[in-house]
Every structure is written in C-alpha cells, then in structure tokens.
Image (tube, rainbow, N blue to C red):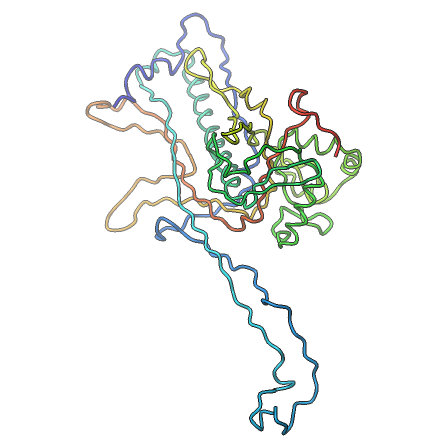
Length: 419
C-alpha cells in the first residue's frame, strides 16, 4: 500500500534541523452560519437508495364560485323532485369539486471521506515538539470537518433553491431560469444554473422587499427565522460588502437601522445577528459564491482558497480571483427549503453480523490497520473521517439565489450609485 511508504511521511512532522522557535502557529479556516441554519434529521434506514417526499399542494376550485339566491323549495311544479324534476332549491346549492395535487421529490444519500497523511511511530522519535505538532494537526483536521459541512449546506441550499435569478438593473428587474440541473459546487458551470447573461444590477433593498412580499403571499411567513412586530423575518445570507452596501447606500435605511430595536434581534443573537430591518436580518457569509462571466462559457466560479507551495507541502490562502470576481450570489434563506439527513450507526443489524460503530458527521478517528505487507507490526496509522448526508427538499420554492454585481469593494469593478 503506497500510502504507508516512508516518502509519504518524511516531512509530516518538522524536525529541529536549525533552531525552531518554541511556539508552533497555524492558520485557521474560515467558518460560516450554515451549520447553525440548516435543519437536521436522521436518514430512514430500510427505505431503499432513493426516498421520495410528498408535498400536498395548494388546491382551489377550478372556477369562480356561483352563488344562488335562496328561496322556497319548488313544490309540485315541473322542476320539483316530487314530479321527476331535478331542482333541489335550498337543498342543493351550486357545487364545484376541489381536486388534490401532490408533488413527489426524490433524494439520495451521498458520502465522502477524508484521511490524514499516514504517521509512523518510529518517525515520532525525532521531530521537534511532537505533541504540539500533532495537536495542531488534529485541530486542522477538526476544522476541515466544520468546513466540509459549511460548504455542503451552502451548496445544497444553492442547488435546492427554486428561484435562481440575475438582476438586470438597479431598479430590481430580474431574469429567472427555472432549469436547475447544474450542481453549484462545480466550479465551471454552464448557463443552465443561471440565465446566460451577466447581471447588470446590484442588490437593493427594494428588490429584497419584493421577494419578501412574494414569500409572505406564498405562505412562507409561518416558517421564517423569527417575527418582528408580527411580521416574518427572513434571512439574507450575503457577503459583508453587500451587507454594508445595502445599509450605507441609502440614508433612510441607515437611520431606520440606527434606531431599530426588537426582541427578534435577541432571539437571533446566537447566529451573530445584530440588527433586523424590514423583513430581513443579515447573516454575513465571508464565502458567498463568486463568479466571473465569460462569453461562450457562462459563469465561472472562483474558489475561496487557492493553493501555493509552503516550506513543506501546499498551503491554502485567500484566492485573489475570489477577491476580484465581478459577481456574487446572495441567498434569501428559509429554513424549510431543505433538511439535511444523516444516517445513524449500524452495529448489529441481525444474523450474528457485527460492525464497528461508525459516525457519519466527520469525526476523525485513529485507524491502525494491520497488513502483512505494508503494516505487519501495527506501527503505521492515520486519521479518517466519513461523511454521509441526504438533502430532503421540503419547500424549494421558498429559496432564492440572487446573482448580482459586486459593488464598492474597490474602484475597479463597477461604480454603484445609491438606489
């Protein structure tokens, strides 16, 4: 097994060739609100590989109701039931039948995993401050689990959004594409994710107010994050630049937010919310998806981190292409768009079969697997985490992904004026 070869682990821990300072520093990964926002459920075992969820749709009469004037029932004339007629009068008002409609949506369980580089016990005799180095490495692995779920929830909300729109101008005009077949975590995407044209507008409060009204008219108010003075409060997941632009580009909004105070802000404080305005609270995400638009290719997603060479291995730092991207996606968040389902562990399913307990939320566990060729003495091991989840669509029509211009982060992209 090549993963256990000596060349793979020589530089895992740094040795003290030349003097190294006493402290060992590490860079942390960025995290977001997504792990706190998305609903969590357990995957149902013994239901097959694909599970469907049924939504009983809103149903109404096909036509306007007809209202008949009430009077005395006919008695003995040609239309009376007593003489063979069919006019029931007061006993049978005009009638329509309400038919029921259901929508079935299927979803599947998906999985991935992460391994650390292998560690040989003999190589632990020589490195500098091995306990500190190993502790820092395990912290890096744990942070990767947080990042895995943040990215998974962000991308799955993106994919499940029933509305993917681009802004055409600052007045809030939009173009929407109802084709949602492209997975947003693919960095090169075609125009089927968004309409095949670049946005010509930036995000405005007027446009957000329009979406809030759409949601409330569609019944989404009951499942909003909270309520403020009886009105539903939805989440706006956006970058800090977009949040600042929405507030600072309009003097009236600045004054309204300056004096706003509500219990809703206290309820949302665990999410890092500091203010509620109109029907929204801003949930700042430093890694909102960003894109450039290239004619003939469509939208090109720019990763948040880029890899460069370190003294040993490769390091990941903020990507300059992400910082300079012309467009980004903001989300109107509703907690009922989808739910994340993670399976439970199976240890004794029956028939005298037994399995080691396995968690599927990305807990890193130590694995030392004996092998007569590559690890006969049990002195090579590694950390491993397994992730499994399914995204159950509930009300995707309540999710909005809005592609818009980025403004005011520097002077090289686009000059935005007050809306």
